[in-house]
Structure formats: structure tokens, C-alpha cells
Length: 283
Image (tube, rainbow, N blue to C red; front, top):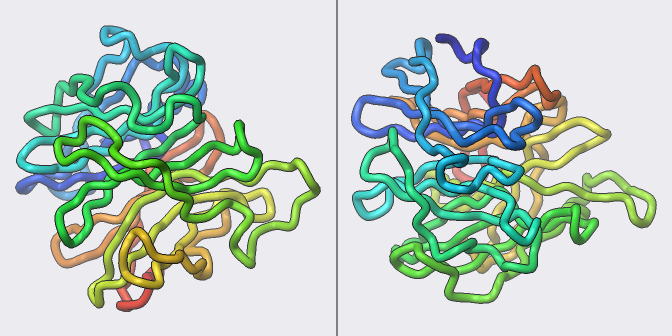
């Protein structure tokens, strides 16, 4: 099948060997009570397999409400899925699942959520620093705090649990280009993903809304690591595309994201990027 035939949000691509694996949120009902996640496979990024279930949230007791934003990282020879589910307390949080293969099936792995139990959180992504230490970068939702934020926690070496308190990176209202909103109106943050440029700069791409349109944004650490101050750069996309991630395909650097951000019509798209050393831009 083609990308244009897939109705998924939050696309994420992992390459393992000569195969690309594509994951995403089943877009029906905005990813609520959809029963889990699928994986699509391809050798050329053009023709894709039919979806195959890689996590059954109904079977595992995780189909309470949201099943959002699965992304799979290879870490120490295993494959770990970071995904957002509604917990028993009614709040959303990020869990880590594990499989021996990128096609699954994935099993619940972390000791509960790796985001704070009393926070409404979503969209966790893995960052591993130059010393090999793992971190979770995630969003504290605007639904709970109005001005959504992006934060991080350090993870245990086995990815079972968080081993630090959350650290604030920035809020949705912090970029100089952010919309000026009346007091009490929400600022959304979602879809963080970390990328290190060819010159060693650390970028964080994330999404929000600019002039009521979904946008793909960039921030850069001033010290090249997660504990730096993140400086906001001009957005990559400001016309209804976002929740992206970056992957390499042969000799090309690619961005995948979903567009339009309209329930029932979302599709994953691929766009080539250029790594400028100090930032990235669309080709």
C-alpha cells in the first residue's frame, strides 16, 4: 500500500537492516479506544505492507481511552516502544514496551508510567547522550497546566523507570514567534524528537499551533546536550503539518510528519531535509 492510503497520525520510522518499519496512531476517533498499534514494513519507502498488529492494548488492559504516538527505538539489542495511554487514574502517561523484534509483539515493560503519576503527559521520546545515558523527553499537557511544556527525566539504564525529577526545557508560549493569546487560552506542545546534526549540535523538533495551524518547530541546545538552554529557531512547517521525526534513508535525511491535522484525513508524508550543521531545513 501507499502512504496516501494510510490514515495514521504521529508517524515514526525505524530502519533495521534493509527494512523500514513505520508506526503511528490509528487515527480513528483521534486515537481513542482503537485497540493498539500497527506496524507497516517497506524496503523502498514507496510500497508498504498492510498493517500488522504489534501491540494489542485490549488484550493488555491498556484500551481505556487514548492509544497515542508509538515510537520504537533500538537500545542495547532490544526494541522499545514509547507510547501514551490513559492510566487507571484517568490521566495520560508514557509507558515503555519491549520486543525482541521491531515487528513485535510488544509487551508492557516499564514499572508503570515513566512520567509523573499525577501529571497529564504524552509523546515520550528516547534521548541517549554521548555518555550512553538514557533520558525520556516528553510533554506535560496543556489540558492540565494551560501553557503546555516539554520536559525530561533521566531513565534507569534498563529503561524500567525514571530516576530523576522532571526538568523543564521550555513552554509552548516561550518562542518569540508564539501567538499572543488571552490569559487562560491554551498553548499546545507535542511530538518532541531529538536529532544531533553533522556538526554535533543538538536539536529538538516539536509541534504546536501557529495562527491556528499545526506547525513543526525546532529548538537548539546552547551546550549541545539535554541540560542546555533551548533556543527557538524559525519553524520548519507552519501550514498544517506536524508531530514529526527524523530518520536516515540511504544517503538522505528524511522528515516524516502527518498532514492534514484533521480527524479522518491524516496521512504520513516524507520530506527530504538538509543538515546545515547548526540547524536543518526542508529541501
